[in-house]
Image 1: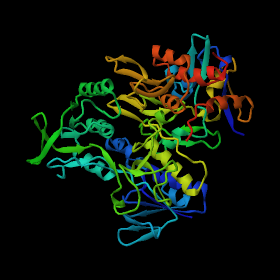
Image 2: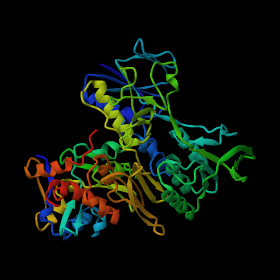
Image 3: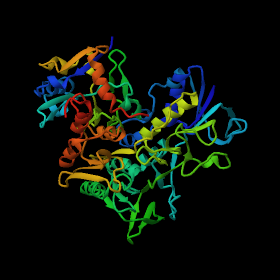
Image 4: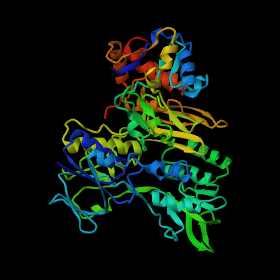
Length: 155
Length: 422
């Protein structure tokens, strides 16, 4: 059964453990700037919102890639960047309407959430269960999807 | 159903694959006029600097991909279409019959009317063949003149500069990438390139090119003449519609299509650089000639060739991203703004950072950025979904970098439109 990251901003305390875990897992450094998941700070409301790729079915990034460097991992459903194939043209970074594919100036490649191959480090690291890795059929995801759907361009 | 696709770029290949997914029994034939497997022109700059080999430019990496997909790939030049018989005619007398035809022939560099433009040391940078020719000459110490600092000129600028050649850029407009960047951004890119040793001459034209010794002498509109071992011409592209002369298909700058990507001949569709498709922002039909639009066109054309209902084009957002010697820039939609619209910007010239947002009421309609690599795609999302920003518009005017916060705050579980956060 496919699983998805469930993000619940109301449970997030802004501790940034997820960003640290993500950058360490994927880049080998504790550097939130290298994280594929980001916590956004809403000062006025006193809230935090973790956000990363929803592995959307439209896969804007994958279709926009001119060299087939983004592929679907059939076991996790994640859209993964194959670093050796990515040329660094950045077309996917402007194609993703959620803003969750970023260019890494150090590597000259793009990076995005790949669900850590099925064991996402951010979910493990989150102390308040604001980030959980749950069955895709879990009803709480419907709310997330319906919100995400508001920003899916209609073609 | 027999589907024939002329052109093997991103639009043609995407259409072919989409057709086979929708109708595995369909006969799908792609006709391409280059001897290579389908490849991406977007990847040519990375080939020029040896970051990838030629196979790294291929649109699909598995050699047997098209065969396994059941797509035939025929090499040939389509000379004409017989609309009465539903046949395309290839050079050499071959005929291929179709039930639905897709024209995805892309575009070709324009050749400006300049004396000497046909000299063998003047090359465009458009095909793998061009890339091979340029790579052979653009060596350390060689004098290379790049004509045109538009999007295509700029994506090969970095490769030419990295080759170690002495690079001089000539652009007739008053800034770099004038059709993608405003005055501030276009001139910051120029400053950035000049600081890195590239000579950039804006508001300057190439008057003539003449042979001199083993190389060329390039005469500019400012009266100067500069030596060149190679001139790379990147002064724009135009849709490949020449072979339609005499055909009963309506064209303007490109092939005119409706929102189903269908031409004036109901059996013939068009997609990609050759098609004058719907622009999301202006709602007019124009040639965008960009990779994401080519793919969108290809998918839509295939759905309509198959006969899906409700596959109507909502319009593609014009957008570009560029890396000029490490300075990353992007622009989206109506980056130049609209009459009675509002705008905001944040500029740090010393750090080469800039963001400019354009609004109509409380909806983002266009954007320009320099030095921004994080979450830049959300600008497209905000524009294309016409998200009502509410209070976030004023917050963006105060700090235009808060684009992700504006998106999350306007749309998500915490957002005002979701009635959870006000």
